[in-house]
Length: 337
Ligand SMILES: Cc1cc2nc3c(=O)[nH]c(=O)nc-3n(C[C@H](O)[C@H](O)[C@H](O)COP(=O)(O)OP(=O)(O)OC[C@H]3O[C@@H](n4cnc5c(N)ncnc54)[C@H](O)[C@@H]3O)c2cc1C
Image (cartoon, rainbow, N blue to C red; front, side):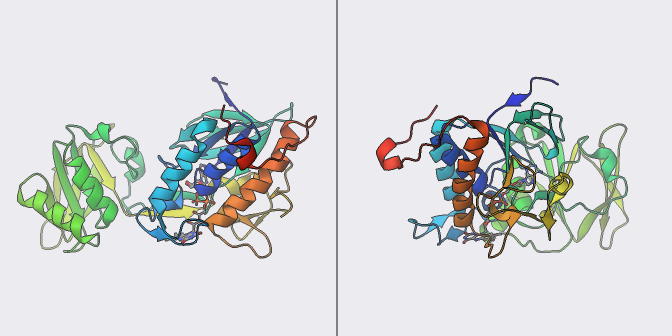
């Protein structure tokens, strides 16, 4: 085992529920490490609706989803949580000493006596275009999520898609890449008007190339991607040289590996005891959108409440010899590590 990450609570999912768990655990002097498949924190709020106002967070008459995530990140700073981002939690094993070993798809190992699953709707999986050999080029020139923009500096890039993600990344990468071609099935784009205008201006200035009523039908190259084949209305199929092909057709949530950890599952959600949101496996809790119980509502504030109760039981598992000291923050303040 290569240098495992050891902590008190491993939190699977860095959405609002997972982030707030760090705060409530921190008040009890418990350390946390968050794992998320997405390259950034915030879960659905960052991935699906960062610019939408939310109206039902207590004390905030209105707050943008992205701002709420920024505030949560600030609120947990004193407790110095660890992060493993861009990695999907794949396996959970109970070790002989009673602790859990949690391993990601990239082989990063985490060890803790308690796991909090805050996995929301599950892992967001990219919608992949139906190109026969696309699997051969994944991580060899084909990427569905842009994790590290620097990878594209001075590279020839083909982006496919017509929504906000395709437009926003085209605008951003136009500063870095040596060549960008954006391929879209229809004539018009679906994204925000402002982004559409920016992309059209970049095309007019020759900085990028727009190919509409077209799609990528094939990929080729020796050991890594070297060209894409374009199928365009009214044209013979043709090849374009490319170092990277980035299809941005959106992400859809799937329960994923969470379904294989021996937990009681009901309709893609983890069944819990509402006393403390514990699952049928002692030491594993499930909070936020991922759990189900009579009367469950998939709301951010419910996730916050569940996290608050859950850490009380987590404390008893981690420190069976100690009593939980319940104190108001107005009395004790927020003492970080
Ligand atoms: C358009 C829209 C508007 C909404 N508006 C509101 C609103 O106004 N008010 C409100 O209260 N709620 C609203 N919601 C619902 C709210 O976003 C959810 O209740 C909230 O995001 C749940 O938080 P969470 O932390 O439980 O899960 P999520 O935000 O879904 O985060 C879960 C995280 O877990 C990660 N994950 C899952 N499985 C794994 C794994 N195996 N390994 C690693 N990582 C994993 C995922 O990548 C994800 O980042 C809205 C939702 C949508 C889609």
